[in-house]
Image (cartoon, rainbow, N blue to C red; front, side, top):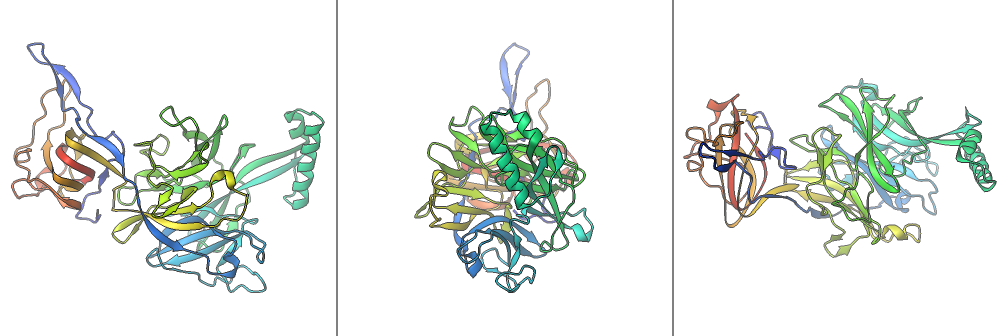
Length: 500
């Protein structure tokens, strides 16, 4: 759905909170009735259409295999930071950079930053032992030298309570001490007092996303808890805060925890924000979060990879939030599965961000042929970058398999017209009425004059942004600033978003 000054911001249907739940009442004769109940509709996740592989190894230092980190649309181009695994000839794990005008054809600029095999004529940003550049993002509130930010999991080493130098020798010594004391039967507290390893989140800043400086103080100390997979940070334009979604554990299960604050540093204690619940299968874990914002509406999204432990496979699901703290999943089914065309992958991971690619939306996905239980058993045969693709705002549908209806909660009309993103099957249709907000105690919901259900011109077909008209007229300028609700009846139809 296009967004400009003449088109209102779309409201995607990702949860139930924009739908009036209805309420029961009794009339003067004591008879029960229900005010505007939703009927015959349900939320359905819309599986992605997958692109062909859009990025493959091309340079000698990429022979060990690629691993995506993040893709941004920035300054008129797509920018990607990706990891490269060590190979027989290139012994370091690297962070590299590429850019594209369309998201499909990628250039690897010679950056002149990192010397490898006697030359800086490459697109290498750094080696991952220096920093791994998790979750690069643009900070609109920062001065130019710090416009780009990133986070990196790290460790601090302590000998008898004193911070020790972060060297290979220190790491080896501390691990040896800990192993020896464990064998001697010392308690965990005694071992930590002698030789301790604490996990931290480091912050990095850059003027261009290529030349990076590591901040002196960690952004966060998470103690002994692990940061052993995708950790994401971002700037929240709505709250003016930095947010970070990190790997967490509750018992022996993986989950997602959050921290952040007004400053890029001195972050508070983490809080669990997304965990498995009783609707999930008992053998599942939340492996990654892939947090990002939704184009157009700006809604907060996650595309978590769900780890099916017994099958040892991972596929991608969808979660949504209105505040970044409380998350829900519209369905317990993959939005990106392991079977893609003729390929059957063992693991599929989403990476930030969900981006506009021409007239579609794309989410970068990393697809691996091996299952989780075979990692390390041999080289990957196949590691594919693919875009998961949708038409705009079509992540979830409010679907009526037969005939259904619902009423939205009240919303201020922008007066720019009303637009629906919908799809009907053969014989299907959508009708719309603009109504007065439901009252408490309940009274019948009534339509605004001239905007009733019978006045609406039926909508059919497959449209991303179709104007709604009543008796041929879609002008809502007379309603600008008014608090109104929308009542929709539809049959054999999917409604993805609306704007008015």
